[in-house]
Length: 485
Ligand code: NAP
Image: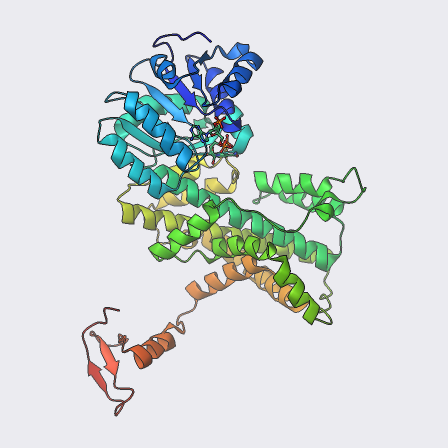
């Protein structure tokens, strides 16, 4: 492979599925000359020979790859997250000059991105942690792109990323999210919301299947119908396709031949772990992550099943009315999951010093990524009306959408409980909504318990100050310094 000095405006390192698709996407856009490099040269050779139309500038050494980039050099790393990414960053950083840009497009943990940005920027090189969503197809045809890093790096990088991003209503699905790890943080929350959305759809399917006793092919029609209303989304669309699928080997519905143990790659757990650290209740997202974990403990499932002699009879329902109720419950629960995700973005931005435009985030999720949906336009509008709302549930559109579906939501959750159908997502979302809605929470009793056993103190409703009751003494109240533990 011939080295061409300084001709490529952009380079990609890592020629596995994501990197090669992203490189092909870049090469297909006017004005881009794309340098490519992979640790094992076989992958690069294969890509170059299969796609001569791309005009790739290919290299088999890091030195040649770096030499093939025009200044300021810009390279996107698409290699295995973790140690692989660190290895490539240090190889590039050794050779790059101040003003050059290293982009990590992998699924990095944003804490790693913050660390890497600090290390790399110390030598004047820009480091841009960038979330890329849309899987293999998105990388090739147009993903949703969430770059962090400096505003200065975004001046060079922004137009290149805009050239390959998905387009929603005429706008490219890319925006500068914020500094250092902001892009990977928002990508992490995107994935957490994705977990919740998928779990809620799966629960809707399970309820319809178990309680209305309809076959997957019939349910595919229900999901297809839902896909033309306010639930219209990529995930609803592919659900209908999956339910239609028949296994060629057995003739059974595809959904009946797949082992019911769901996998996970970690970004969902990160969303929940960070929400715990930030003190943001994301129960809808957490239940979705836990539902996958639970499904993957067959030993516990079998052990409990062995103790049970009978399961509840399913509640008799009117099929069409119940399907309508589930649609409403799904929508309301989905609103809650997105509200929780955006709460985490707000809290993360405050904690890490990012100025994140929530409406712009919702905009770039409208196409290219897995949670792409019409619904995101409503979130854009909510933040356009008032960027400082304390929760999406406060927005008049979402408040009335949830209120309109509330009775149906309660019918669905109670019917599920009576029929023995697990609905951790629907249930958690409804409880969250109720907890925000009631005037008084039992947290007052919890404060009493904390004060009883640990002298953690409490505040009173009607007067300022911090108090402690002498529980093991005469039970009188004293004014006290606030507890530090
Ligand atoms: P991958 O299977 O995660 O990683 C394989 C690539 O990493 C190969 O090019 C491999 O090079 C390279 N690599 C691993 N260790 C390396 C090291 N120490 N030094 C240099 N190169 C090393 O590839 P992928 O599925 O295409 O994903 C790439 C990145 O995109 C990952 O961070 C992934 O999480 C992220 N991502 C993936 C998806 C998806 O849908 N797959 C979606 C969004 C983001 P060799 O060929 O030499 O082994």
